[in-house]
View 1 (cartoon, rainbow, N blue to C red):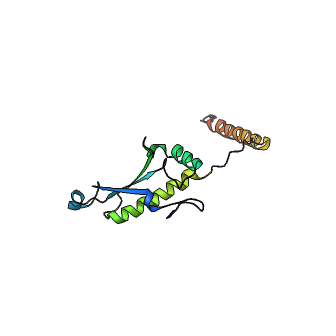
View 2: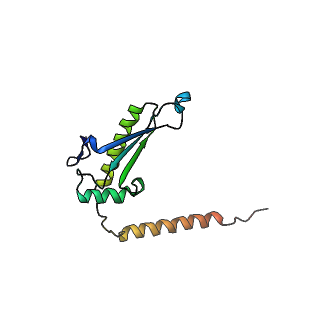
View 3: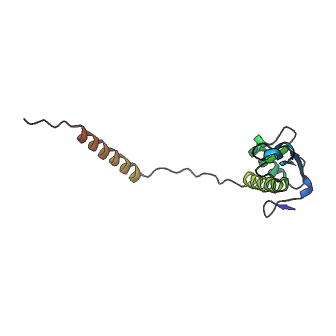
Length: 141
């Protein structure tokens, strides 16, 4: 089981993996070894997620989810397929946690009268300072 939050756990058999040739460093290995790992997760058909969780994930991770409802996470940071698989799982957990997290509703506030007055006074002082700087001093003979 992969622990996402205290109330959401996803069985490992719901995740599918594919390996492919990775780009980047690796010398001759780069053309021979499939070290890039792509993790696939079916958000739409997952029995582990509630309808609300599915909706949040589909909305917030829309750029990573295809039309078929599959979430895709790619890892090709290391030259090891096993390490890339672990990194993909870690990234998957982070993505789901961020997508499911409830964002607090912003409370509208107003700038206080004192803060407005302080800002205007500061602007006035700055203006006076600049005006004083530009005054011409008559040259004496």
